[in-house]
Length: 358
Image (cartoon, rainbow, N blue to C red; front, side, top):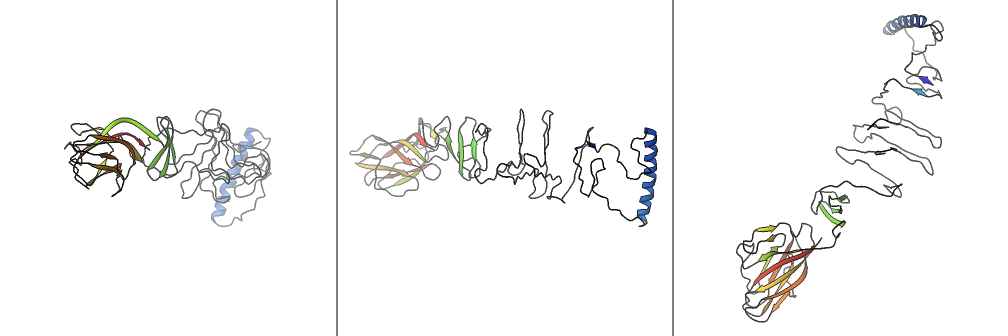
């Protein structure tokens, strides 16, 4: 094994101190340094002709800029660090390792200390990679392998981008051992900021999918994923109460768009259940009641973006009727429904929400 922390051997037989005593080696070094000073001086005057060194073999000194053909292991010890800064000559890399034999590694790093890293890489240039592994072997080569006895095998972090990118012809990411992929909990809801195609898990254990920018759908978890969510009934509209938004009597053929987002107090109209129907809800189940009717007629409840209809939700046949009916309706805009009055008389309307689809 060649240890490059030991003294560098010279090829001058007059100063070769291999096998010499410590005193002789010290004298040899002084002679070497003396000649080195002369060489530097000669180089300054341009009188030194640069020699071409042959490749280093086992036992030779490491020659920078030349091939080094030793087959024994070269070891750095005693806290020594090898630093390569800005290397680009091979593979556009500071450290570049290749191996064409089967079951070998181009670069391998081992760490046994607490929180240590076998290999860590840093790239600050645009389009660079901190650690880049490529395997051209067939049929079973691996670009990067990370192994840990008790912690993470591979960690990828980015302060302004993607932590880990995977590319493959079959799978971009494959769980090869347990088949499980873990996800840390994060704050996520129907309108949380997000990039389309993202999966996330909330603190309750529900799995969410971002189907459009900043729009999420719950797909699995303790609550029904992507389905119906019954709730304790809340009142969202009462045209009799001036404290409710958009209140007032309905006249023949009139219509009104109303929000069903918040549950309100029956008397004061104050919000008591904010987002009882959450952002992103696509439809609601509700109960519509017609009261204080002046003539036989009907009312229709439709999505907020529908301006006309031939359907009816509640029908009554006499004045002073109190008639209710339960139904389901799609939502429009920001959780909006529309009430369209029939062709006769006047009436008041009450809307209670009993659940929603998300």
